[in-house]
Length: 176
Image 1 (cartoon, rainbow, N blue to C red):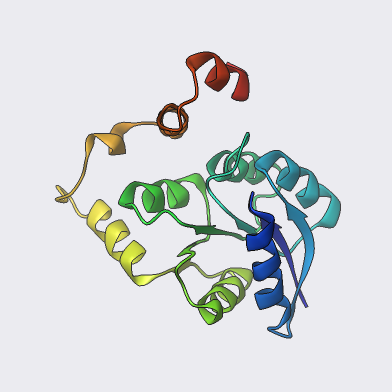
Image 2 (image 1 turned 45 degrees about the vertical axis):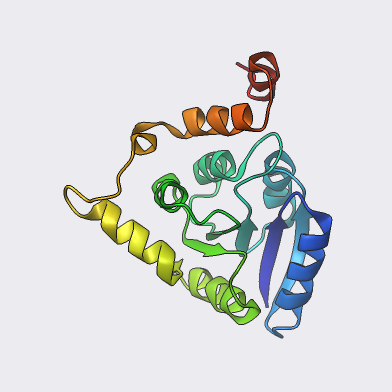
């Protein structure tokens, strides 16, 4: 059985994902988390075979989770499951050390296949994300934006600003 950790800030999404995963027959959800900090604790406690992580979570987001987990569990396969389809997310996820990227628009069987693939040491990426990554890797690729030059932290701050948080709230969230 493949032991899976689910991290998403929406409990109804986690419940649906749990059902999809456990109906596969060869996987079980050993832990759930509603934010990145809780997910890190669960990695240490539950010792999953694969972590399925959302990027946009309160507090410690998915990109920061990947960065921190890589220092303590460098071989843990991490599959990012997200609503974000923008190119810059795909690029940042793989640059952070994730093993796979799948959007929440994907079919349930794609999620199951993605978990199996990263569990066996492979990489998983869906079609549109693969195209974005390929364009990014091409020299002088069209479609590159100024956002590509921002660090992960700068993107996180920008996202929080777009959500209407004050600079004080953002600083407190990231202990800056």
